[in-house]
Length: 114
Image (cartoon, rainbow, N blue to C red; front, side, top):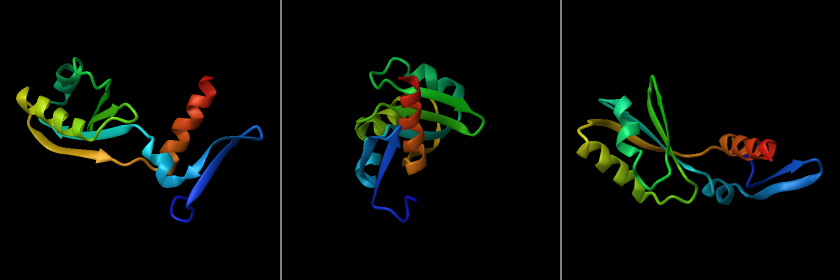
């Protein structure tokens, strides 16, 4: 759908919950950074005292750091600096762009919680 449409709307029980151009809707998503490094288990400790409000998931393929919606991209450089200063070698640090599907799941999961 993301490749064929310019705008979308989510309808719940006959009521439009969110609508607009896809680019604007995706601009309001959280910032996710994937990290491959020498010591993934140390990443949560090095980032836990930061003011970013990051959610950190360590997995077999690396670390995913989710930052709050509206976080400046400058925070990515700060994350890299903190890890390198903490003695962690970075192999890859990449911003992951949200897809329409991930945005939809984020919005609808919040609706279920309400």
